[in-house]
Image 1: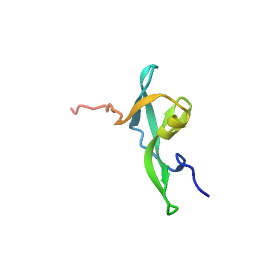
Image 2: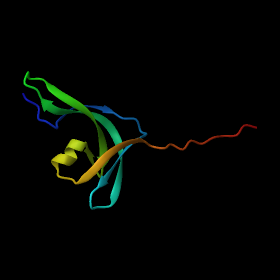
Image 3: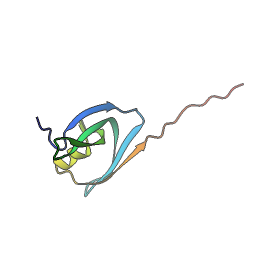
Image 4: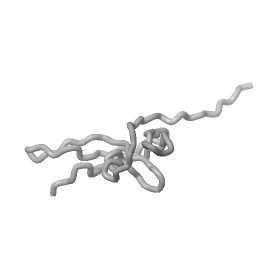
Length: 96
């Protein structure tokens, strides 16, 4: 079976502190979504029958999990991706 380009073949969970940001062209500007996993995505098929893959962020946008390839396939107009570590505020205590 030949797996299609853009198909996700594996997913590993992401830590809770990662987000992805992109600009949705002509809409509300920057969109920031939580990264829920790291997806292995088929990039190309080689003549020897093997494939090349990339690791993409799998992120929650609305009620759907997306990758960059999903946005391309669904014709969503966007500009650039930036993966960020979410800023975490930690409580501190004073001794004494």
